[in-house]
Image: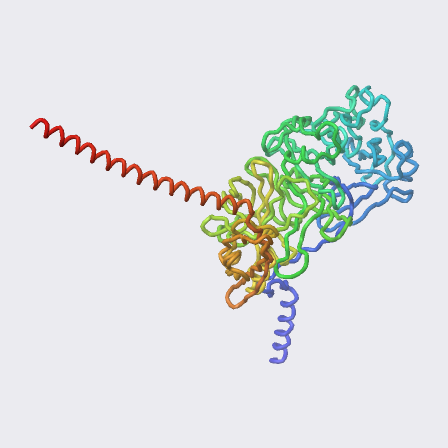
Length: 620
């Protein structure tokens, strides 16, 4: 009997072990690690069909996903085997021959009248000679049937779509289409790249073709070959605005591609940026090509080249190079927004992949982009204790540049101050609204916990946009060992250009993470350990080595800097000598004058007394 009871107990224990999830027995700190399957589609334009999300891109690349994290390739390459067409080379022969090319550029697909309309385009590449048409299919994955070309550009010395001779300074390049329905159900098509700028056409929803008599449509921004392309318009009911996303710069790894956004109350504009600038006036200077300086102050810059550095190892960290040509998925039921784009990466050349980041609207009605790729995160209530700490910080600024902005360290202190590489204040409003003031600029956004692929953990982040249209990101840094801390400070410690010093040098004595820095000079008569500079009188420069000792607790490291101090100018010395001689001469002259004056005064007094005495005697 006892043996039977024992066997029953063992069986019950085994069943319990099988039934109860293993997570119950796991460490409370265990974190579910997200998985990603990469896809490579350039210029991804998103469309949802049932429970699947598709992106269509250049070279007839197509991929799909159910979670925005794991992608499956559907099609790639403009060749007879691409499943989107029975034979795309034959089907779109007219467009390919017109532009003298063998490939297609960024398309867009929209569902209309129970069918799928693909707005395709082809371009010669070195000129704006392009053709845009529409093909229709019953199924999202094709096959698509061409309905013909409806727009051309680059017809040199010929009448263009508006009846005037084509002029690439003012007329658009007929590429990069995006078709969308406005809040009233009207169909529009926005398009354009470089050349005359970004334009918009009103379309016939029944045919998918432009309404007659519009020519190239209405201009929204750009011109004079300014580098703007890849327009995408998304209406957001919560704010009542249409948001026009556009990418500035060049798409290559050295092109400085970066995403920007402007907004309007109407689908066809006018669109303005955060400072209220009318984008219809934004273009390159007359007579220029690719005049980035004329356009980079405008638009709200969302993402450019950046790198969140790895603070605890020599690996490169996480970042993007030339991210851009985006689309947006807006969930009408939940209001959730996702930004889809392609990006290149540091030290990986021209290799590119799809990336998806979540979008949020700040209190000013501008979208802010989550710093890390989407991994299913949600906005939640955060506390000051969770937010305060050390952060890797990126300011995307407004530049169009191929340079990669590397993170710097800042601290969000418990008292609401911001210290480190930038200074200011921070507050939480409501559950998760982020308000930061940095260098006198106010930024508004959100605090959000996200998956950090460097630390492989969920970390606090922030994203915010300023009233000047600049985006900042922060990623909370895990607590580092003293060795890692000192190593990081040594890595980032700089004195600037020390090749021609003529004034005192500012030598930092403290840095991030409570590290201390002391200095030693190889020649304190030229540069003191406090940074005071005494320039030599010799004709030759003086070279001094400044050595920093960086310490935290028992960990110590040193870093040396060679400093070249220029001699004083000979003219300065002569001038100083002349000044001294002149001053001495003035002093001497002044002293002589005083003595002569005193002597004359004494003689005058004596004469006065003598004369006065004689007069008195005569009277007697």
